[in-house]
Length: 376
Image 1 (cartoon, one colour):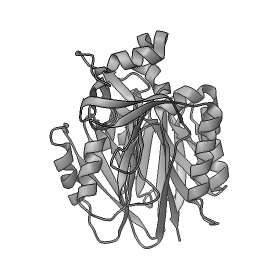
Image 2: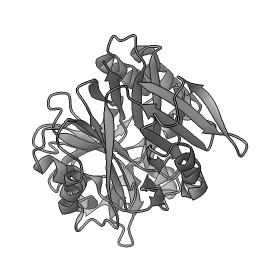
Image 3: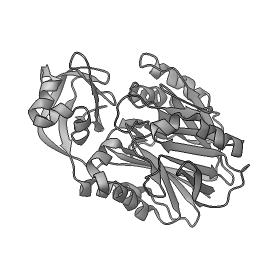
Image 4: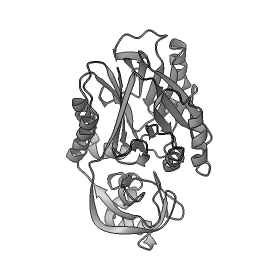
């Protein structure tokens, strides 16, 4: 496998670090960056003209990774050429929550089954409930591991974009299928948050919207705990996510507030079933960095060949880490080894399975998830 990184620097594309790749060898290009740059089709046209055989995918972000650190550039491109493996790309447009679960079947049906080792998904980060796509894919029983992330928009909470088919659009999901026996792909998910406060019960919810906790308006619940920070919602809630107990009768998941609706209900980045027991969470920079170290250590594989790691970390983690955000990525890199190239982004949601069942993907918030791709 060969990997090349390019960054958009002072109105030109600059090769940052690379293994030499012939233009016709490049099979896949990830473009991650600021929403204004992702919307600029000139960038896609540039890579299409130079790398005619490459499949180009990407997303707007709330921070982009470059060579294992948080990038200061507005756009980062990662070019990949496999020795024996290959990729296929599928996408669906004009999505809404009423049809998302069923249309996830349409998305997966576009990917050939023979040789499929792993699926990585990028999708709209604000208007869609990612839990519905995950549920639809899990119900197919494909027994293919899936990871991915939800697009961001730099904490603007206005709209997000996903790239496929040489365009960037809202309300889109794209699936990248990785193929071939030469590929070894592992994934992991790290947290680093602790619960605080009393356990409460979601007494009224629908999908990803909470109306009441303990029979009181959900906004009152946040007012009791957040005090003066309540005026900065939804952004201030990134530092206080909800831990959802008994989410699916077994595992717990974390959920982040994404918006307050006109009726003062609250929309979250994934489903919160009625009857769920919830507690607020908090963290520190040290805890988050240790969480990244743990997930890196669990996924690391001894190899003297270049490896690609796609890291998707929640935007809420970056808002806590602030100037220490790069340390989270550096801690991950130290565990994975010098031959590992890390690309990826800060997201509005992460897709990954728990370790006990790699075929049962979940939508997470406030996690660091990684997809490590090795080629034999």
